[in-house]
Length: 158
Image 1 (tube, rainbow, N blue to C red):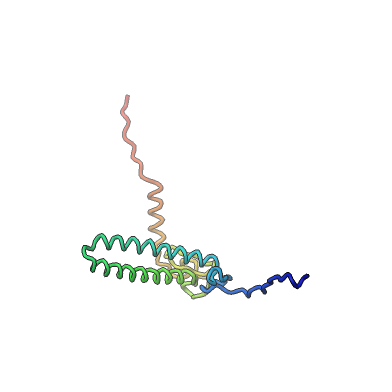
Image 2 (cartoon, one colour):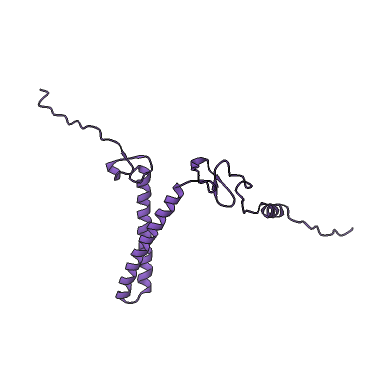
């Protein structure tokens, strides 16, 4: 009887790391990406579609002849490709978190300075990394805004 019932058992697949090197596991259903990277890719495609549609509408409105509109549509496609490469470069730079002074990897423990740089625990004080930010004038401006000069008008004597 058991031979008539054939049950299809599949061996579990080996886990596959995400193709975007984010140290999470992906699956074939998500094109070997983790769920976070897949969502980012979908959002990025939607943004490109919106930008392409908006730029093509503007180009079609501006151009009067069909030859000009075809050239403009081709230019819009090239511009959207350039935008995609710029976005991917910015995202890759955000992932690298290193101390500006010693280039040590800081990860989540990095300190952001008011000068705009990221530092490790050793260099996060302004005197340790020769911070160009002017704390004195900033403090004076904050105090001046918090304490405005109040001038009272003279009262009339009765």
